[in-house]
Amino acid sequence: MRLSDAISLASRAVTAQRLRSFLTLLGIAVGIASVILLTSIGEGIHRYVLGEFTQFGTNVITVAPGKTKTGGAPSGLPSSARPLSLDDAKSLERLPQVVAVTPNVRGNAEVEGNGRTRRTLIYGVNADSRIVFRSTMRSGQFLPDEDPANARAFVVLGSKLKEELFGADNPLGQRLRIGGLHFRVVGVMAPKGQFLGIDLDDTAFIPAGRAQELFNREGCDEINLAAAEGVPAALVAERIRRQLIERHGREDFTIVTQEEMLKTLSSILDVLTLAVGALGGISLLVGGVGIVTIMTIAVSERTSEIGLLVALGASRRTILGLFLGEAVALSALGGALGLALGFGLAQAIHFAVPALPVHTPLSFVLLAEGIAIAIGLLAGVLPARNAARLDPVAALRTE
Image (cartoon, rainbow, N blue to C red; front, side, top):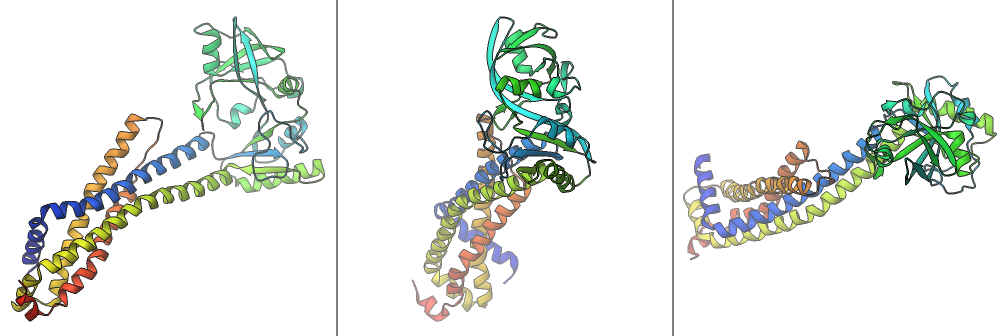
């Protein structure tokens, strides 16, 4: 039998029972659409989270008090771990391959200025903070390079905090009250956006020593460092570890590199993406069962046709190929419909909820279509083998 004849027979078989064929490919389409939709959302969130962390660069190293696997105690809460001091931060500035070091003291406080009051997040840092976190200025300057313990009472406002307190007025040189302390505004940060739900523009930056006085702290929440580009972060982290052990007498701190954090996050997010994709895969299994059922019914209904084909010289391999071709055609068409449906739904959801990131990689599209075809092939094997094994004489007697 010629290939063109085989394709013609398979096409007629698919179109002869249009409702049945449509329902079969619809089952595959729903499964593929579910996989594409869920993995697009999962991959979008994956890229969003990694993008949020990499906006500060990939060479940031964080030292937190206490020997833990996390980032230390929550902001503003007391910790039993030995605190990291401003002198600890200063000692790390002398290490090779360390570009910038900033202590970090965080807390919430009321900011009062220009007759307005707003409660916001306060960061106690030094002049290197702008280098470590790649921040830029909208106007004025950042905190001057002074000893954090004895720095002047200057404050740099986030762009949103500036708008809330001063509107269109120029805040430079104005005085503010933060908690019970007074500060003079020396700069305004350029808009930075959000970081995992935290508004980085609704903040104020003051010298670390002033923040310790404001929040009644003895130490720092953490110390942030920027390693030189191209230098392995693990090498710099080991130098930091040796330096602080020499100062503390023991390893009572935790060092986390940006590379380690990104690797851990990426692994977790990969698992989540696979998990949501597997949920959609359940629909694909249902579609595969549908193909098995439909093809089994088709074999029983076309027994006499199969006997006639064999009597006319068609080999069992040809019969097998005919029914496998029908199953693959149904699953391929269902897969294409599912791809269009899943991609369209993902974009519609992103349009309706812009905050929800979605991304559909080409590799996912090709993999999903390949899975659809493979399901059709596997689901059609058993009915096709049954058709190929029919006795032609008995098949011709069947009405």
